[in-house]
Amino acid sequence: MNLNPRLRAVTWPLSALAWIVLGVSLAGGQAISGDLTGTVVDPSGAAVNGATIEALNVATGQRVTTSTKSQGEYRFGQLPVGSYTLSVQAHGFRSTSVLNVPIELNKTNTANIRLEVGSASTTVEVSSETAPVDTTSAQLAATYDARLSEDMGLGSTGGASGGVLNLSLLSSGVTNSSGLGLGAGPSVGGQRPRDNNFTIEGVDNNNKSVTGNLAAVPNDAVQNFSVLENQFNAEFGHSSGGQFNTTIKSGTNSFHGSVYEYFRNRNLNAVDNYYVLQGLTHNPRYDSNRYGATLGGPIMQNKLFFFTNFERQPIGSTGTSG
Image (cartoon, rainbow, N blue to C red; front, side, top):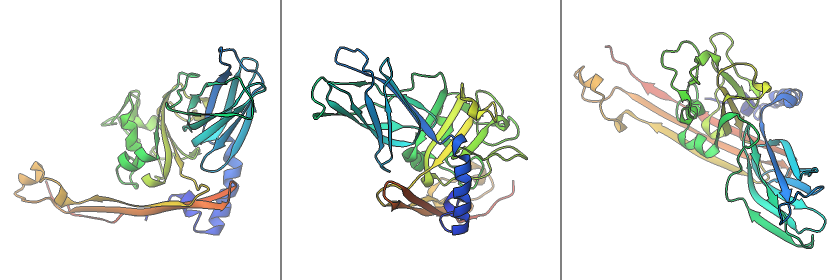
């Protein structure tokens, strides 16, 4: 049974209390969020100063408010990952709402907003058809959401190189470590795996003895997984290699859950030529049946939530001599 520490805290109250206290003490330095920036302009393209902008987290109801500066620019820092609705109000302009603005882990997205002249009592809704892009930094990064973690982050949750870490191989400049020495995870920018840095919810997850990650998060409990290759902020100053950061799903204002299974069986694969040369007519036993379930929801609407994950992976296998 694989339960990461944060999920296990849901089961035992004393552990939960300890993690809550720890979470509060570390909140200031956790890399568990993203930023949003942009400008607000009128129909002619001129900047709108003093406009009020509210960012609403669709899942949790969290609201954050800011206002535009002299050049019409605004910025939201450290927003929890998720989908947001931006509401803009300014004197002499119609209220404007931009729907489905994504906030991604360790990224600064840009969403520029154009206001229409008219009464503030009239609201204009704009659907965010394209994902905002980061135009504020030269950071090389790739972020993978929950869907990709579930469908493509294959591998054992127990191994140092399994689970969502496999998603990093989809990024440019990231390759299999092969014979580059000790450490876990891939080679980023030609560096050795021992130069990599691993965090979960912004908390250090590095094995200090042989390098690599200590704990692994089940694929279906991952909210976002990001890989930073270079030009990253000073908060990721632990190592010069790849920065692998994982955030865990949260509860929302509605109850949600899933039941899943990852199934591998020797009878589903062709017989490897290695075994054919040994006179075998079928694959040796290797049966992996990884299954689990997730559940999340509200404890107090818009204020307090829970999320838990259970996973088990029985494996039956045999080996042959060379």
